[in-house]
View 1 (spheres, rainbow, N blue to C red):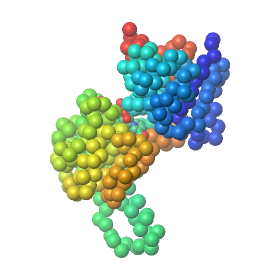
View 2 (cartoon, rainbow, N blue to C red):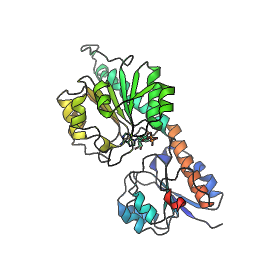
View 3 (tube, helix red, strand yellow):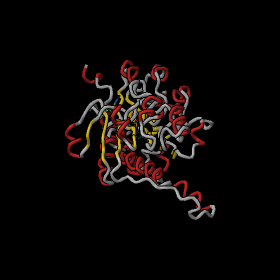
View 4 (tube, rainbow, N blue to C red):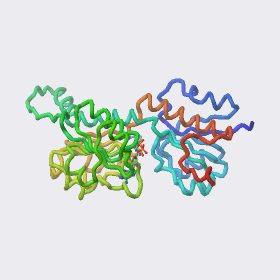
Length: 329
Ligand code: NAD
């Protein structure tokens, strides 16, 4: 068996003391694994330089654009240690005979828990009270805290993460409705979720949360038009991908009190433009794209990516191929 070079570009692996533990299955086969202490965001040219001799990459958020793939002729597989593949030009990968895999379902629990972190932080105003008590403020201002019980949660995107969010919402005795282009009726019945149109979801929900991939159809799915249909007490959440929200229009709605609050983990560009007015909004709770960073999720996604690369290099089809045409044709 030939020895191949595998580049690992996921800086979150650096959280682990023993990073090499994940790559034993590949190193045991005689492959060379390069764990790169690279920044989270690389330019196309920097990426080409790093991966030009690699057969496989275990990918984070780096830009696998057409330009990058045209210049990396050794590359045969990109295994994303995550779910979203919007940083990879899939048609170009297919054209260049590069297999793309993701880690479907491997970080769903982490993202669903992160959503509840944002939700409860908004409704119980925890971040705000935490700041005030440290300044010596003991109930000088007593905000009315918002309950979850008997409130309606609207889920846009009832996939792996959306379903776990729904299950957890049921434990809080919430009503759950969902909008998806593919309706998994079996799961909806089992969890107790009603499918509705996007319009109905906007009108009926007290909380709207997005769990869709970024596609041309989901870009700006939460926009002025949809926000205007929502209750003024509604809160909106985005732990999917930044452009799913029209952030300017969400910020405007927060300013005008068209909605009550927002919880946001993902931004139109990352790292974001910190001069954006969202960073001045008191009624928004913001985190830096950490939804999938539960320690369980990091382990699962890396292990899954390693298995995909291992299978591929042994001539087997990895379990979560995105560009299936490469195998079908
Ligand atoms: P999934 O593929 O299991 O579910 C996505 C769901 O969205 C599917 O049911 C699909 O039918 C639905 N959908 C697609 N297009 C739609 C449209 N136009 N309108 C309505 N529904 C539509 O994916 P998942 O694992 O649940 O993850 C969802 C997204 O969350 C990922 O694509 C990724 O971008 C994001 N994510 C973010 C983090 C984070 O760290 N914040 C971590 C993991 C995933």
